[in-house]
Image (cartoon, rainbow, N blue to C red; front, side, top):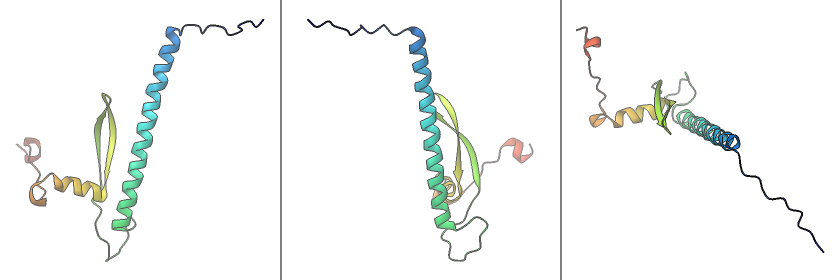
Length: 113
């Protein structure tokens, strides 16, 4: 005669559920950081292909570097620092202005009022 040697699974405790929630949150942050790092590397490679090496002199380059901007993007209710690089930043900024002409608004603090 065979006996059942399998023990019934114990109910998951509250501490285990809380620990699992922490692991899930940490994994989401890891995936987000890895994704941002990957996209940043891809954009930098695109800039390198279009502009050549940083501070390099090349008359046949297709684009110019326009610096970097720091900003914050929302993700799951939090803020994530994002950096726009060179050619991608130039394209994004120009697409927001009319006819590709960049205009800056003068605020009272900038205008000296």
